[in-house]
Amino acid sequence: MKKRTDNFDKFLPTKKNAAIKEQFKQEKKKWKKERSAAIEIQKQRKIEADKPKPIVIRKKITMETMPLNKFIAHSGVCARREAALLVKDGKVTVNGTKILEPGHKVNPNDQIKVNGKLIHLEKNLVYILLNKPKDYITTSADPEGRKTVLELIKGATTERVFPVGRLDRNTTGVLLLTNDGELTQMLSHPSNEVRKVYEVKVDRPLQKKDMDAIAKGLTLEDGFIQPDAIAYADATDKRVIGIEIHSGKNRIVRRIFEQLEYKVVNLDRVMFAGLTKKNVDRSNWRYLTEKEVRALKYFGASKKTTKKKDKETDA
Image (cartoon, rainbow, N blue to C red; front, side):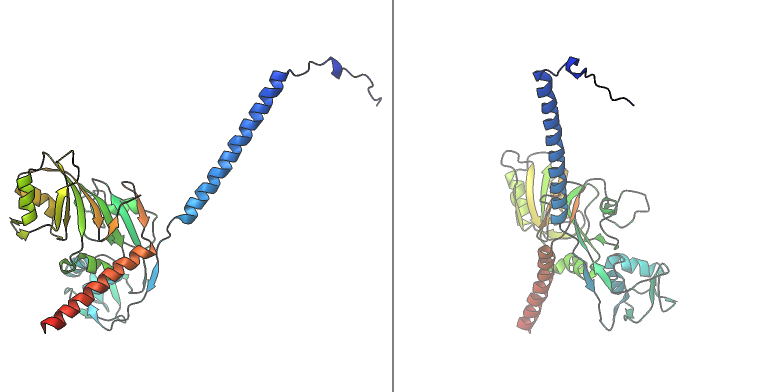
């Protein structure tokens, strides 16, 4: 084929300076966008890398004997109180025999089944802090079909965890979930006096005389109760009060204010056993750090040591 020798390119319209500038501007804009996207991906990767990983502790309990409900709790099935109910309801067998007494002594060699499923003491321990919203109940399951806090931590762990203590359906704030039965028992036991701090909002300004009455202690239907501390949380709004209390009685904070004819509008737990909801938005959760887990364990150990010394002193 004969090569074409004519050249008409010189007759084509050349790009104007404005068009060249616009093309360069668009290419620069595209490059900046791609660079920003790459930087954002790197940031997200760093955030994911820096996120606290679940503190998983492999634990094997080698006690010779223990109560059946304690064995179930330490196996991560549920809390000890719920375990006692499972036993009484006839849902637990030991070596093939149905046992109805929660205090029945068992040892690690026994074959223990809950609802037909074999359970073991050896497990991975997981610790999760949740900023609980309203309209969720703090149980593993609800026969009435209401939403439970476990729905909020789906995907957090394959282990079966359960709430430490309870928060009312309409109470918000710090909630610890774990499968560490020993820690759960320690934090839930009244004798350990675990600190809890609440922010309370009532329907009208709390009068000074009523605050003083609460500080001195009130006698409710189930006995005398005195908070560890109470103060106005907002200097401009005396309907908002901060209260520290270690009692684990049912609805205790609400009942304190109801005793003086105040209606609790909002109740938010801002601290539990030294844990706060800082940097955890409502309905969100995070894993405890190693430092936090150690602090909780140390708290339990220090309580046991104090009790032992007190007993020795009394003797």
